[in-house]
Length: 123
Length: 127
Image (tube, rainbow over all chains, first blue to last red; front, side):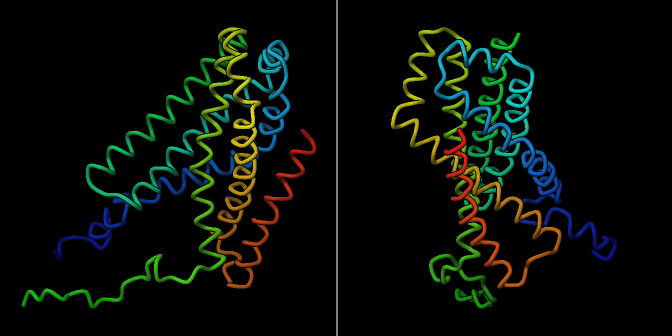
C-alpha cells in the first residue's frame, strides 16, 4: 500500500468510478445549448402547425437546418450523459448496464433519424 | 466481531425522511424535466421524418402533433425546456462557486420556477 500514491488510491473511487470528464462534457454542452435552444424553439414552434410545403421550405433553409442538426447532435449527447447519470444514481449491476446501453442507443437513434430527415428535406 | 448491527456510521438523510426544501425540489425538477424532454423530442423528430417522407405520412404525424395530445406534449416540453434552461444556468453559476448561501440559492430557485412560467407564456404568445 505504501508504494501507491494518494492519486492512485483515489482513482476510480467515486460513485461513477470515473473522473470529472462527464461533468465537464455536460458543462460544455450546456453552454452550447444555452445559445442554440432559444433560437431553435422559435424555429420549431413557428414551423409547427404550418402546411407540408411550408414545413419543407423552412427546414430546407440553411439556418433552420443547421440549427436543428446541432440541436440533435449536441442535445442528444447531453441527454445521453444526463440520463446515464440518473441511471447510475438509482440502479446497479446488470440493470444499470442495460439501462445505460438503452438510453445511449435511444439518443443515437433519435439523433440519426432526425439527421436523415433533415438531409432528405434540405439536400 | 462481525456484528449484524454495523450500520452506525453517519448516513446521509434519505428522501423519505428528508424535509422537502425548495433547493431539493428544484434540483429534482431539473432532473425530471431534462429526462422527460425526450418525449417531446421523439414526437418532433417523428413529425420531421414524416415531413421528409411523404405528404400522406406528414398528414398523419401533423394530425397527432397538432392534436390535443400534441399540444399537451409540446406545451409541457416548452415549460420543461425553459425550466431546465434556467436551472442549467443556475447550475453553471453554482459550479463557479457563486450563489450558494441559502437565501440566495432559494431566491434563484424561485427565479427558475417563476422565470420558466413567464418564458413559457411569452413563447406561446410570440409563436
